Image 1 (tube, helix red, strand yellow):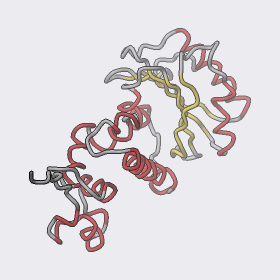
Image 2 (cartoon, helix red, strand yellow; image 1 turned 180 degrees about the vertical axis):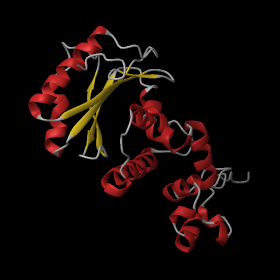
Image 3 (tube, helix red, strand yellow; image 1 turned 180 degrees about the horizontal axis):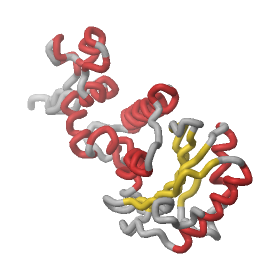
Image 4 (cartoon, helix red, strand yellow; image 1 turned 30 degrees about the vertical axis):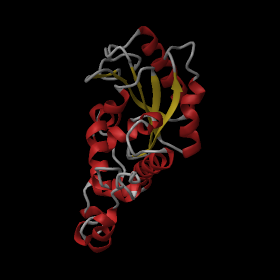
Length: 235
């Protein structure tokens, strides 16, 4: 009886030399590579029937691009064919490094000049959460983003949210201001009475700590609300 042979595993080296992502990166620079090629460099090998670039394309399509991969739970990545714990960790780590680099470089930090600027940075991700998450934008004197920190997960109400925890990251980083944002899993971003009460408490604490509170956003499904624009909690 002939021996059964395992299906071949497709490697980057199976590609023509001028199509290999690593060689293209070395020759042209990382900025010249497509997202799938960059992911392929992390994966190194493909799976039967798919080379590493094709696996990268499949992941990007399945999760909706780099931002979707960033949002996807670690366990969900493990369900993808050809993705084990090591590869999932490499993908998550690489995306997180890119996010932190953007925040680290003052010249490249996004500036918050309107509620829409802040919503654009987090709305897509936070609208998919099944629980309420409260995050704080830490801002410098020019309203550039130093970091976005999650400080609470659960029901956002005055009994549960400790205002001191909201300001702790700002004090540590020497932030000049903060912008608070949380999501409504129901999809309706209409601020609740608790949202308004929490906003008032945060603003009062900010005055005592000399940290400006620029706004409080509520993220819903495809929509968001600025409490400051609606005059809720802001005197």
